[in-house]
Figure 1 (cartoon, one colour):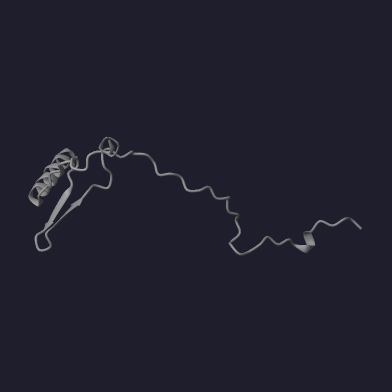
Figure 2 (spheres, helix red, strand yellow; figure 1 turned 90 degrees about the vertical axis):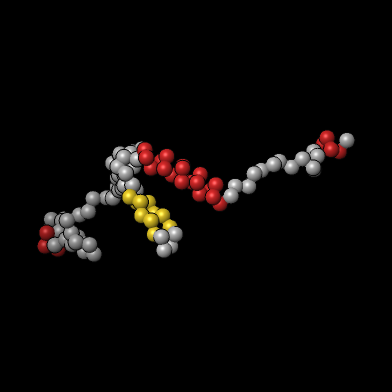
Length: 99
């Protein structure tokens, strides 16, 4: 009765463990499939001393949008005066009521 509710514990799913060789071959196959479709081609550098592989992609990939960059946040227009200075009024030209 409880096996029906909670499931049988002896039926574990069988998962095949992938060997390192299989992992490397699968990754190489997937990478080659992707790299052959690129235009312009990527630059591939192999460093045997370190055992690494580096891929330099073009600045813009073909599937990326070729849109203009977003405009900067709009700032209020700057006045003709340098920063730090405030507008000064000439006391001789100030508006006063006539005598």
